[in-house]
Length: 406
Image (tube, rainbow, N blue to C red; front, side, top):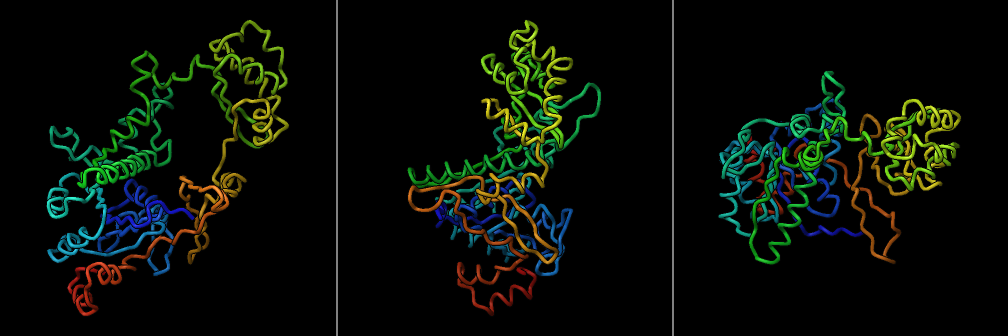
C-alpha cells in the first residue's frame, strides 16, 4: 500500500470536526498524528449520538468519524508542566496543528510565534472561524463558529431558499467543517514543499468563513445577476425525478445532449417540439411537459434502473441515495471506501480516505489496508512521552499523579 505521508509527524491540539478531518486524512496517508486532548477528552467525544467505547466511556459520533489511525495523548495544557511537554513534543514533529479560538494558543504558550522561534522549520496550521490574522483582523475574529454559522454567512443556504420560509441550516452535512479541513491539508502540503525549497517553516491560517465563501460559489454568479435561489433557472435540466422506489438526478445543460435524453425517456418527439428547442424552454415547460413524461417513464423502474438507462444514452444521471444505499453501492464496496469498525455496541461505519494512490503493477487499484481504530482517551500517553521525550516510567507516573497527563 502506498503511504505518501509516511515519516511525517503531526502534533494536533484539536477538537470537533474541521481540523480532526484534516489530520485524519494525513493519518490515513501514513502520517503519525499525535492527538493532544484535555484530560476529560476533546469536545467531539461528548457530542451526540454516542456509543460506549472500548474503555467504557460514552464517545460521540463526531469523534468516531474523524480520528481513525491517530494516537491519543491526554495532557493538561492549562498547567505549566503540560505546556512544557507540548513545547518539547513540538520539537519532535513536522507539523503543529490547532483549532482554538484566535489568540488562545498564544495565551497557552503554544502559539505560532513561540514555537516557530524555538523550531524555525516547524509548519504550524490553524483553523478558526474567521482566521488568526491581525493585519487587520477580521471584525468577527473573536466569535465562535461552527459549520452552520459559516455556511449561512457564505450564502450556501440561499440555494435552497424558498420565498420567506426560514432557511434550513446544515443542508450539506458538515461541509462548513470538511471544506476548511481540506483547505488546511492543501495548505500543509504546500508549506512542506516550501520548506523543502527554503528550509523554513511557516504558518497556514485557515478561516472557515473564507473556505465556505470559496466553496458556496455565490459571489461570482450574483455579480452576473444570478441569485443562488434562481441559479438553475434557464440553464437547462438540473432536476430530480421520481422513480418507483425513490428519486434520481438528471443534468442536461447543453442542447446537443437533449435528443439523447428525449430518446432515453421514450419521447423522441420532444426534439421536434419548438417549445423545447432551448434550455429556457426546458425550464419553462418542466412542470407540464418534461416532468410528467419522465416520471411516467420511470414509474415502473427503480431509481438505479432509470439512472442506468439514461447513462447508457450518454446522459448524466444518478440515483439519490440514502445512507443504506451508499453502503450497498458496488462502487463503494469495490473501492473499500467504507471502513467498518467493531465496537462494544456493534459495527460503526466510517468513510475512508477518498484519495486513492496506485503504482502500476504494484498492487490492485482497489487494494487498501484497514486503518487503525480511533484511539481511546490517552491510550498512547505513556508511549509518546517515553519514545519522543525519553521520560522514565517514574516521571510519567508522577505527572499522572499531579494531574498533568492521563
